[in-house]
Image 1 (cartoon, rainbow, N blue to C red):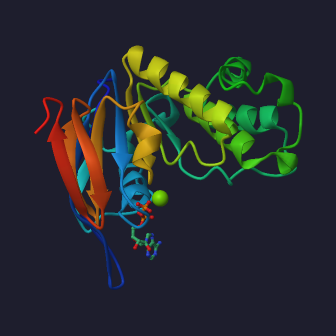
Image 2 (image 1 turned 180 degrees about the horizontal axis):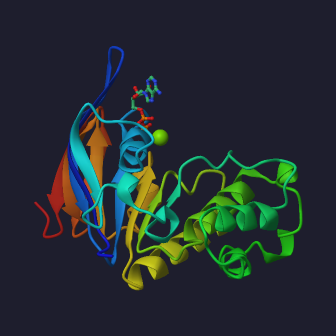
Length: 234
Ligand code: ADP
Ligand code: MG
């Protein structure tokens, strides 16, 4: 499958809230695309629409040229981390991943590999109920990597990670993109992404306000306004 995400003119209203107001951007293979914007800008809704968890009122989103909902083995096409809280407290980390793998027809042997990849091998047989947010994030990322997908979408993956975890996450995102994957990673903090991303999609109020390579440095992003300066300076 071609590793791209294409978001085209998404509109989505929740009651009186216009969550998405013409959201459009592309995520290319081999790149970490940072999806940045203040809380409420529409980042999570965009990801949910891409995954078919929310229906858009208008527009469309494609992964590898196809709607996500048309994929027969979704985990082997797109890995997503949306809600790190969604672990069953009574299940061990390893059992959670085994269950997920089997429900998707994936090989269980991949489970130990992804646990290793996210630095959770030693906690594999502990129940998730006692996990910190950072540990749940790691398990969520392990789950996203189960099917070795060419497209990854991580919603605020740095949340709950300690400084060491943040450095680790940067390295992981980099290596996943360097292997040719299209990686979309959201944050409400520019500072979390500016060193990691190759490309930035800055959003506010449900739409893109800047779509730029990191060669162009974004200096201000607040209330739907950004100031751009090129690397060459003013
Ligand atoms: P972000 O992830 O950038 O913080 P969201 O996509 O979560 O933003 O939210 C965008 C807007 O849509 C916000 O105003 C939020 O309150 C609203 N919203 C998101 N999901 C729902 C929902 N299920 N019901 C009502 N409003 C929602
Ligand atoms: Mg969000």
